[in-house]
Length: 291
Ligand SMILES: Nc1ncnc2c1ncn2[C@@H]1O[C@H](COP(=O)(O)OP(=O)(O)OP(=O)(O)O)[C@@H](O)[C@H]1O
Ligand SMILES: [Mg+2]
Image (cartoon, helix red, strand yellow):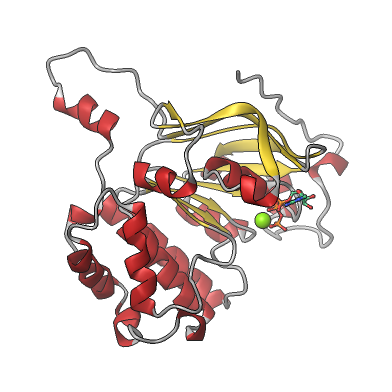
């Protein structure tokens, strides 16, 4: 597939197109600064989280149920309003720009595409109709038909099911369709909320294989929320662990893989009951004082 599916972001273009000017300071592709998320005005689900994704980087975020992972990605992609939630404080910057006031499809047009928990397939529409919907996430629909052909070469199963309803696809095929829709939006960053939920171990591997290819072939940065920390740390270069609304640990993937508590609680390498980090006396939470 050609590289025409990948958007060049304005600021990145400016940075690379001006070789004579002084190098601009490096701007993370995504920067979440000390964000708090509240539901129904009272319920704090995210209590001051900061994270970064650099251009082309794969980052994973994991943690137990109810830790606030989905709330965090809803804040990033502006999906909180529909569930009576809001960002109470902090900021989300994409390519150095705040996303305040943008609707989710406008965020996607900027190059940040989220695949929510359960995927983004509209079950009542055919596979092709689902793909066509990505036009709302592009600056223009020019070239969309050609790009649909390209993504169908990438995901041949979708070609054979082109006229079939999305709801009739298997779980794994729906994830492929979700990723194809994402690719058609020409993202610089894909945010995926538990893309392997309910998939068999073989499909989990297949799904992560596709993510690895999208990152390698198109340079798309990826932020993946995942319960299966072992698989996620295989493709990520950096990871965050979230518990009870806070990041309790973060570091390079290698460091997380080698950490005894993470091995015990998230990689299933020691012990049997999964406890909270908070229960471990020698665990030192790193305070984060990012502005
Ligand atoms: N729309 C909502 N209204 C009120 N509370 C909510 C809402 N959505 C989530 N919560 C609460 O916010 C907290 C964090 O939930 P969230 O879905 O972000 O966790 P999660 O880490 O994604 O969990 P899981 O691994 O189960 O998907 C939970 O206590 C949850 O009950
Ligand atoms: Mg969730």
